[in-house]
Image (cartoon, rainbow, N blue to C red; front, side):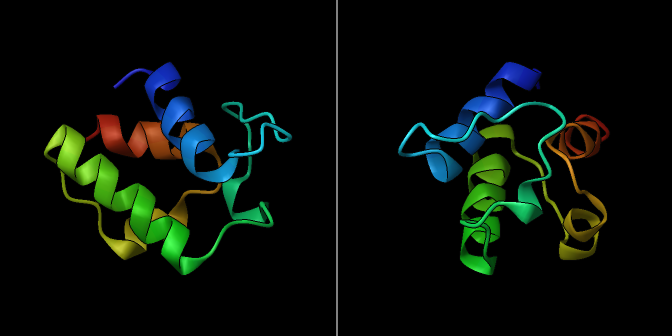
Length: 75
């Protein structure tokens, strides 16, 4: 997966109004829109689109978009 693809997914979900710039260093858990529902939505989309499985414990270890990209690419 490329970083641009992951940033696009985050932008579609967390940056609907276009006010927040999502980058590789964005700490997505600190975003005011981040919730367990948001996490579920992102994980579901990633699992379906890339045919991978992400466990909750793995996601909890990620804090930035880049961390999540590294996890996805390790699958």
